[in-house]
Length: 334
Image (cartoon, rainbow, N blue to C red; front, side, top):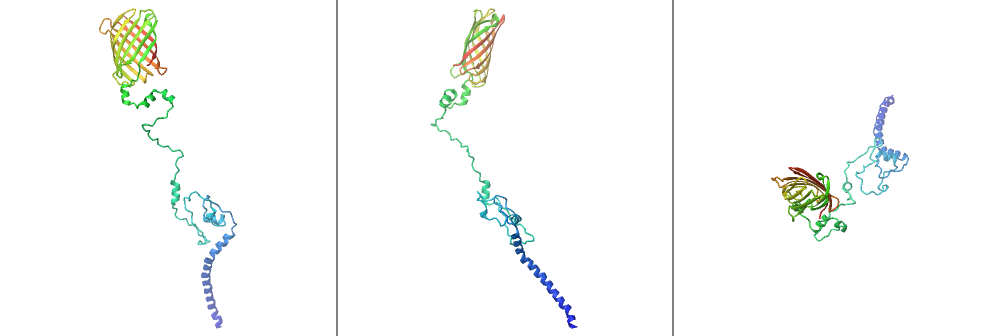
């Protein structure tokens, strides 16, 4: 009877012991067997080829599934520079098989990676700054170009003063004129015209001009000479000048001679005689009964370095009649 009474107590003690062993031994077994189970699972995976650099570095999951072993330095080809970011560190043995996780350290660019980002190779064709020429150093220019360029010849001899050129170097040139003249008021008779325009007196704004024209019949004739003093700098693209001179005019309706006074306005769209326009208004024998007003419009255009073609249209207004003259001229600029 006593044996049967103590049996439930013994069973309860064994139940407590079994429960304790199960609680302690089971958990310890789980902990101790976790690495072995992880290694056993890895061994059961089919071996696959490793992914090599420069493919992206795989995560822990990809390493376990796609590679039979972790990548080593010998598996990677030589690189020109270090990668921009450090690879994450893995520790398979320290992680449990139940919940493997990835440890990603803080990414800090290395000195080598910064040098890769900032080191830029120089341009293959660098533009070097030309050093200034010394006084005795000659300029290598084709002689044919120098011979065909008066401006370059002048600059090679001496560098000009631009301010002085604007004041004294004229934008127009002396013209020697020869051509055909027609007199519409004298039955459209033709004749000849000879003259010179703007002959410079030294390097001053004073110029001299002269002209002669006559028709074939001899009943229309003009001869005269003038002086012009240009008031604006000669290098400007326009100028104005008072005109003082002498004129003798013979026509079929009136005759006059005397002092010729007036003004001239010039427009110079292209310098050095290439093209210019002028208008001259003057009066012969002003204030007398024989006063005649002369209005002359002239335009010229260069067709060669020293040759131009031009035209003059002149009207002669007197109290007892009016005459006119139209000329087509060939001009030489010495």
